[in-house]
Length: 401
Image (cartoon, rainbow, N blue to C red):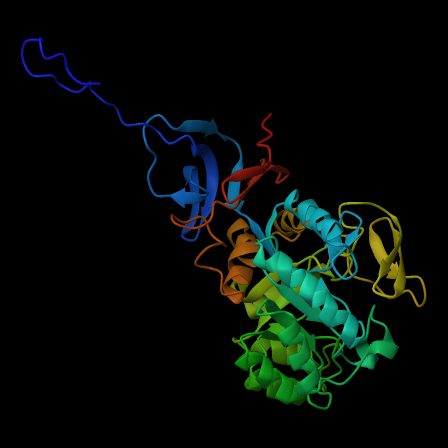
């Protein structure tokens, strides 16, 4: 509005005060797990979906005294949840499965497909790649069909095939740049050449469902394999004369080892062995979850195979092999720090920082640092989940007593 020309003196603008953006929150009073250690009575500032370095005056303050704040969990091996399968579900069903795991603290998820015929898998890759392009998932993991029939686990043997580079390339192309990892038995014909092909295309080559010797596994790692798919499971046991793949994967600093910490897949001593030998910087906790995660007991399909889930343990109806898990990462975290006595900082590395680095996303996720996405989990003193934030939006809570 123009000043009144009849008024005396010079018109002055009204004084202004800095406005606090409406999307700024200060989470304060909690024990915050940072890359440098645990900050008691720390705070995290969230602004515009990211973590900010400074808190502006007048921002909303949420008192989280008596709680923990840890980075959002990152799951690089997950087949579904909430009754939905990432291998066979519709788009809406897949989104429901993703949502189920977000409610349990997994703010970043790679969708895993199980063995199928090539036409089915290429079609599936197209559907999942669209969800990756939309930011719902962080990419696709192909677990099979290039695995050993000797260590097939819950995969259909008649659909298995050797990892010929031409077939591996079909899956890479079908994923339209969204393939993040492929598990293969590298001792099979074409295995080493396929590892090199995956590396050339920026896809993680993972050794798993393998019957390889120690020497064959060393060759695969030298060719570029960098992940052990659910170490100990679906591979020869560690032997004193035939150490097999476990020793080769544990000893090499280039390899990140996946562990399923649900109390069923691994004895606590095996978990401790992996942590002690590989070190906290090389462990990634995964769920290897199937449809029943976050849903309940009953009968399910894992690809073409029928699975019976009883008391939270999934097994094939025919043969009784363990068929993935019903694990969620909040349970894996709590078990790690309360039963396995793993330091909280090391559990955070295994659930967040290490898988984020493996995916090449550690500039955005995996730790609570300014500039990164505001992905975080709030836990109470007993490590029960009380809140989940993804990109600055509350998925759960915060539920404070």
